[in-house]
Image (cartoon, rainbow, N blue to C red; front, side, top):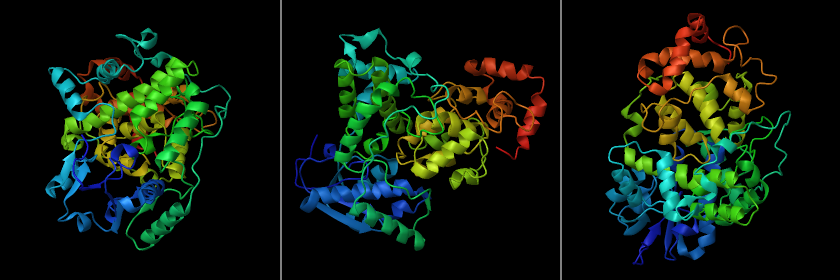
Length: 491
């Protein structure tokens, strides 16, 4: 449904591409208070401002561009229309001010179709796999009639390879990088001034902008991924190398979440590579699953589970505050290679790939009982692609199991053996992934058993945790490991 009036359309920071433009008058509001609510990664603040200002420059006379402290300064009393925005707070705001609201866009499955699918489950768990198959069947993407392309719905078994042995990098060409312009220079100067004035607190490096800020740049990034990294994306999507922060990942989540790149177009572009014989099915299916499966799934869960979902439960009684190394993105005191590398990459780029987020950062936070709501906010603020809708199911649910099993059936906890298998981080690390006791005991390996000890009462009825908990009970040095981790200072 598009606008049928000549109302000015206010577009938000997640709605900056052609998909949200029906040709009428537009308004973009740059509200400084949005950037001052909590500490924010410098790269994220820069990308948001750059994308909004680039969009205004492209729209020319069709756009009103306002730089204010708060949205209400320009919205009060205006007869505006909006495409339903992407957070609970923004949706409340536009309705409170009586704006004309159009259905949301930018996702493959409309909200009403997800609601119908969820209702049809008749109380069953809303599993990603079931949703993903339904979307494939509805859209015909990677389907042959009523059967999945290649005879399998997913190719996870082909997409879990460790990195090549003794390799510092995957050996792929460097990704395409945007070239900064005068708008980026202005953004940088404004952020410097805002920080001097105390209006914002910025964390992380002021590096060159690495993510697309315009639809044209997003298309170039997509084309570059297809040409140089798509074939290797599938096999190595879970792998980590200390000298290769991008690996074979697409780097498209940020422009997609800004509304610069239509996710369906991205998937169709990638699927066309398979049908033309230029890309393997496993890589193409892996990318497709991330976009029309997981991305849409967490978007719809954000609305389905409700605004109170992040705070409704704290199933594992996790209340510890985030440490300074996280809050300040300062890895200088962190000795474990995997965590040091991940935090350092975040400091430099405001980005890490999904395994670094889940199995390094999330795994560490889970083991140490960091407050899940604080962690969720941190992920929103410190990642260039962080949004209020994308993180709750990912962090509260899948990563921290704080919802008690709504999103994931068991906690994603693992010891150093997983990181050793899927990365080069353990080679040369001061800690030994095979040890759980002693000066060189791996904080992840020992932390795994200390975590199980702490949460055993909360997980005793979880059948998927029966085997790990049985292993904990057989651990001869359980008390010593728990005591060691309780007093751990080096990590």
